[in-house]
Image (cartoon, rainbow, N blue to C red; front, side):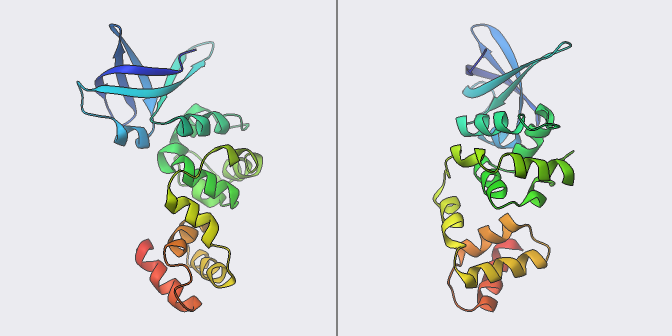
Length: 196
């Protein structure tokens, strides 16, 4: 099993990257998060990989971080979620945002990924609820999201934003940035600045 590739980036497009290691170019399917983190062509790049072996194909998937690789491995354990769907989900949500969406039961956030319907999104949220605790919160912002959406005022503001059509994780993220900044109305008003 190939765990990672470290070599020269010789080709890249929105879905794939080719990294040359020891004279061999390895083609990886990548997420948009990984695409954004790759250097220019000709520079040295490192990706963590997952190799999928089927009867008719051998595919390599590349990720910018071990957290993204771990999230991918967890997603494909869910019945009905293949590598392509997992890549689509991780192209929409960072591992930290995915962990937040799953822990808060926000299956709507998962349906933004191409080819992921309500049924699959709900199954992912249900089956992985306890397993995503392995993904570190990563940034201070993501940690604040989980901690700050605990007060009643903030909860009411999140509920109001969800009613306005935002996903629960989007609402929690926005509210966390202006948490406890006054009344429910003021929190909603200030949160909307981050959502519009």
